[in-house]
Length: 353
Image 1 (cartoon, one colour):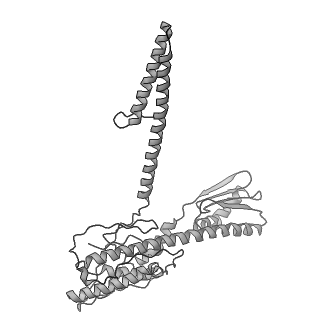
Image 2 (image 1 turned 120 degrees about the vertical axis):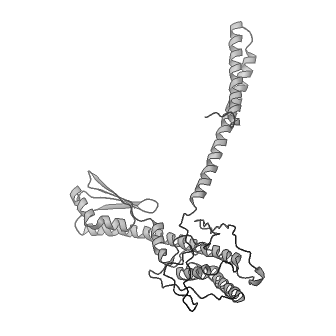
Image 3 (image 1 turned 60 degrees about the vertical axis):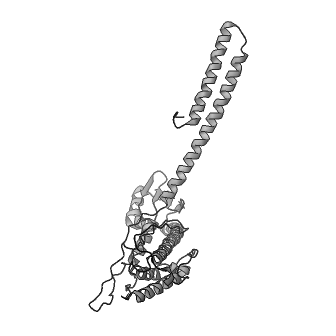
């Protein structure tokens, strides 16, 4: 155990106990030489030994507690996503002053008050801004509400989202406040309804509507609602990852059965099993196979099938030797990001400055 006299009180106590023990041994040695009573030496040795054991146990316990606390802190830090920060897209205006179409997938702007934790509790952080405070009297009281609980299986996003159009925003002050309040009410209906909160089309339209409100109008309420939209996006991502992982496990189990049947048709009796937390590893073997036949199976498409199903390792034996394939498929997180990228929802949503 490392001794640090300036920062390790248990180490200092152990040193003191060792000193008492050493003193007892010296007294005992002197008593032995002088042929006198060894009772004092026994007391010193007993007291020093007991103190040394107690301080050693206490120091060990303290180090274990400190290590656990550091591990929990590191795990909490690692749970935070590191998405790219997207800026709110500018709204092109034609000569008549009307907003025109925004490109698809450009709605992934994000709120400057959101850091977005990846956890399923939808936790959020807020940050101060330099915007002038909004007049809360102009906002209906029911605009900002709590985020609803999660669904077990959110709907899968459609592969080709329609082009989102940025709605017009009035130029007058009073008309602008009224439009902003309406958009906030519409957004609240989406985030309060969990099914809508998990719908990528509705979420993208809601974000585009919020991100095009001028920053000088009702900034506090808009940023609060933007944080709730980001919480919806995180639940959408978490739900899609859970569903995709569950589907992949079922597909790998089914593939093991199918592969055994396919080789049985070629008169090859195969034993096969999948294992791992997500059934991502495969073991198979047959005495009717040899190394050349195994290599041909892999080259003729088996390797591609394993990669597509998300297997990270496949070991195939001919009874004497084992052929091991280490694969690097796309992770579940990457696959979900690819699904949500066309909607602009693959990264953390933050409002532009």
